[in-house]
Amino acid sequence: METPLSVLDLSFVTSGASAAQALHNTIDLAKHVDALGYRRFWMAEHHSLPSVASSAPEIMIGQVAAATKNMRIGSGGIMLTNHAPLMVAERFKMLEALFPGRIDLGLGRAPGTDQVTAHALRRRLEERSGDDFLERLQELYLWENRDFPEGHPFNRVTVMPSGVPLPPVWLLGSSDYSAQLAAEIGVGYSFASHFSDYDAVLPMKTYRARFKPSENMQTPYAIIAVASVVADTDEEANFLAGTYDLNWLRRAKGEMLPLPSPEEAAAYPWTDQERAYISRRRQRLFCGSPDTVATRLRASVRETDADEVMITSSIHDHEKRKKSYSLLASCWASMKAAA
Image (tube, rainbow, N blue to C red; front, side, top):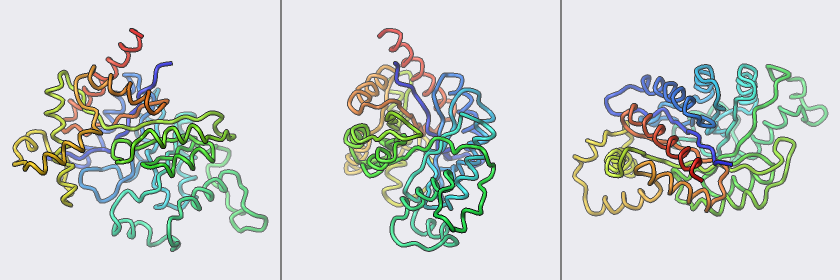
């Protein structure tokens, strides 16, 4: 069976454009890739990042699901430590009720922001020390199964809308912790290779080797998320990837700005040290012509045993971003036909 392609979108805010436009671009991109046959479309949760407008994926999931017909739509992911598990259960049951069989609930451990913003997000929640992700995940399942201990006051709470199942849960990770946890509880797993310095092979294979079947999932299913820039030629793709280069450098310096254009990147006075840094970062970027990128992606699928590839692309120009997904989908299908 051909490995499906999917999309992870962050509603990228680009220089010269507004955050509101970035949100509308997400909906437009979703309609575009839905027609191309992509399997699912996930949206991330980030806060206080001028380059990312996606701060409330649960809202965008409803908008995107209403504008598309075929893809599964979900979160990549909800940062569970920022939210009360009951609220997550309510919102995603509501989405499942509105779009049955099309919603995914991807969960992450990180706050998706800096420490000050994380504190602002959580300061009205119950204070807990350390990493309480596992505790919150357990509570989410308790709400779903109505399995609080006898006499617990939460047994009197009805999660609305009632009679609607929680969508399939996926754990997201950038190391091997979430891989082991996803395997232990029997849910899907997605590895964030697009930003992780951790090699994808170990967590992906660890997940598959340790997977325990559950009521929700009988066999393991692993997604690898990668960053990609596809254009007609390798040369053009490398030029467009200048957006990544300058954005990476700015973030390394603590400069949080909208995504720069490739022209801005080309005009930047790069030092030898900065070029060496970017060269290392480029190793994780799948950049080039359709054949170049598709060939490299297939090698990654073989190395990691991935069941699915999820593409995120922060190309500055929205139409060229859409074309990147079109070119890759066409080449992927051609390779399948030739196999």
